[in-house]
Length: 100
Image (cartoon, rainbow, N blue to C red; front, top):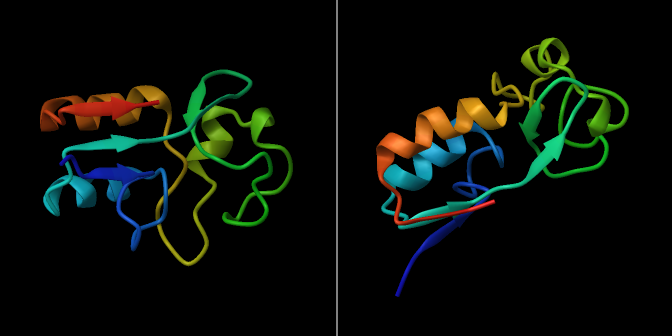
């Protein structure tokens, strides 16, 4: 049986670098995460709006790299990562499954 971290590890803000690292450290075989297209890059984020889970406001598809770097999951220091940042972090972990 495979253990897949849905958006990372549940006790860490979803779709963040910390969530994916924590899933690996807890023994997950793979991870699933969500990708949206922003203004100038692809970002790992689930919701259509930033307001509910982050310090940001408005539609997620209007994200830019600068806005994402300065938008944090509520009550954390975790920002919204780009797809490239996530892949750079997780590929060396050798997960057996990565589902976008």
